Image (tube, rainbow, N blue to C red):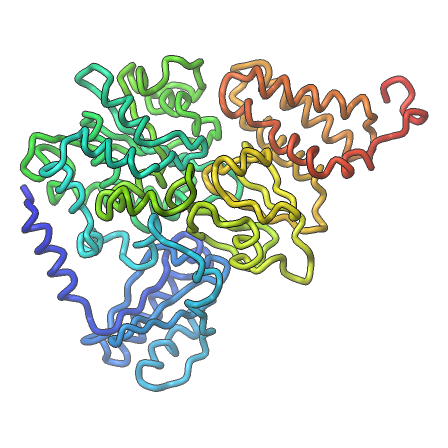
Length: 541
C-alpha cells in the first residue's frame, strides 16, 4: 500500500537520478515510422563511445508534436537551455552527441520559437515529449497521481464533480457535452455497479490526437479515469482502443501493470476504501464503434451496433449499469484542473468553450503535427501561422474539421474563432480534433465523395437511411464528378442530405451528409459547373 510520502519519495528519487544533460528522442509512432528507434540506438552508442554516460542520459519520449519534421531529438543542457534537431537520421545522430564536446553536427537544427510551437498552450500535452511513457516514475516525478491522492483524501465525490463542472470542461470527443453535467448525472444514478469508459476509438481520417496522448502519457489517462470513477461511484473502467494503435496499446498495458504494482490501481487505493481496476478492450476498427452505444455493445462482446436512445449510457450503459463515457483528451484534462483549479481553467478559452483543444494538423500544409491551442484561436492562426500555409506557393482553399462528421471552412472565413458554437454556425464541428488543410488544386466535390465513400463503408447497416442513403449519395456524387448528372440529380442529393441527417439512428448517419452540405454551401459552383444541360440530359440522364 503506497501513501503520499512514498509517492513523493519516488518522484524525488527520479529527479535526483537525472543526469546533467538529457537527450530526448521522440519514439512515438510517427517518428518510429521514420526510423527513430535506430536514431535512439545510435545516440545510446555514441554516448557510450564518448564515455559520457556519467553525465548524459538518452531517453525515448513520447510525441514532440512537430511530426512532419521527425524524427525529432532535443538536447537539454545543464544550464536549462534546450536544442531541437529535426529530421535526425541514424547517420548524424552521433554528431549530436559530439556537440557536447564542442564538435560540429550534421543534424538540422530546429527552433523552439517557431510559430508552430510559439502559439501553443500545452495542458493535455504538457508531458508529451518530456517524459518516458514506459516509466511510471517519470510521471510521478512531474506530480503524477498526486491529484488522485488529493481527491481520495481531501475531496468528496461531490466536490470533485463540482470542480470539473466549474471549470467549464466540455467533452472533447466531438459533441461538446458539459463534462461535469455528465459526471453529475451518472453519480446520481442508483446502483452498486457503475462503469467508467475511455473512448479511444479514434477513427476520423487524418486524426491522431488520442493515439499520441496514449503513446506519450498513458498514466495521465489512468489518473483521470480513476478520479472520474471516484467522483461517480464506479470501481471498474475500460479503455476501448483501436487495434491499429499497437504502440498505444503496449504503453497502456505497461502503465496499468506499473500502477497495479505500486497499488495505485486495484484495491484500497492510497489506503482508502476506493477500489478501481482498468481493463483494455481492443476494437476491430469499425468507425461506428466511436458511438457510445455501439462501443458498449462491442465491449460486451456483441456486434458493434448502436441502439436507440434513451436510455442513455449514463442511465443504462455497460451491462445495463450506469456508465460514464469520455474520450482520451477529456480525461487528460482532469488532473490538471484539480491541480491548478477550476478558475484557472475557466479563464482559458471563450465564454462557452473553456480550456484548450488538441488538433492534428495535416493535409496540404507546410507544418504538420499536433497542436494544442486555447479555444477561440482563429482558423487563420492555426492554418497560416502555425501551419505555415500550403507548400509550393499554392493557396489555401479550405480546412476540413470534424472528420466525416464535420464540414469545410472556406478561406474567406478563416478569421472565425475555433470553438464549439462558432464552428457549428459555419456548418462544421470541432469533432475529436482533425484539421485537414485543402489547397486550391483540390476538387471539393471529390472531397465530399471521399467522405461519403468512408461513411457508406463504415455504416453498420442497422438503419435504412444510413445504409441505403449513403450509398445513393455516393452514387450521385460519382455522377456529378463524371459529368453525367443533371440539376435533378443535384436536387436529389440535397433532399437525401436532409433525409439521412434527420432519420438515421445514430451519429454516424446523422452527420454523414455534413461534408456534402458544407461543400454545397460554400463551393456550390464546383457542383453546378459539372452538371449536364437540360437539353443534353433529356428526361433523367
